[in-house]
Length: 211
Image 1: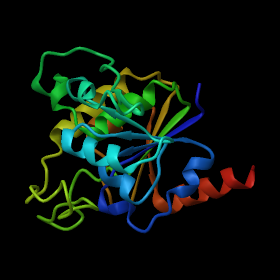
Image 2: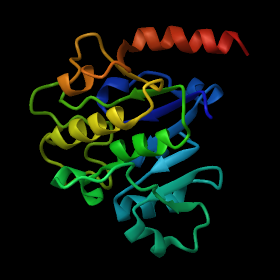
Image 3: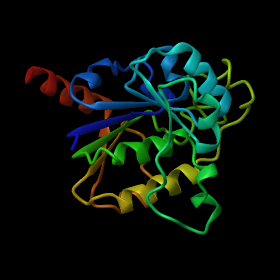
Image 4: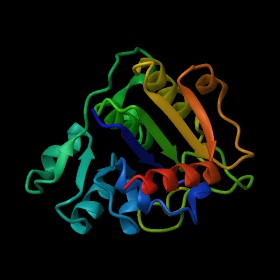
């Protein structure tokens, strides 16, 4: 069992927040282009081209996880692995594994460690500025096709399913700014909590003080 897992999305809310100390006390799972700025132990890339970019760039210390349909194409990269299966089966379009993005799949991977808590940083869901694409890598390679904010309904639904499936003793700590509103689907779970970045910084400092 891993005590803590941190899954890092690329929403603008985490810009300027130092995520590097998370590695000292938690298993860190990043998504997509985060590899350009930060070395994570695990990196989820469900897009084939993003997987190729990251495979060309990261070191052996990072395990990249991608869809089964892409993993065979990366057989010569020993650190590229197949993502774990979804922990449930459903008949909705949102339940189809191909419609799961890197963020929710990071949650799937996080649950495989059976952690005491999963910290979610940078999962903003909605733009911080109206009609602005909310991604730290907007306009860069692999992101130029995104011209408008992505509808977050699938992300909300899929994390809701994971939160409900997970052990009730596993806490989900959703970190965002103090004006951010948690989806009602998430807040209905007794093991899901909201924290600010200031509060997360205080928690990190407490963990570092124990070292």
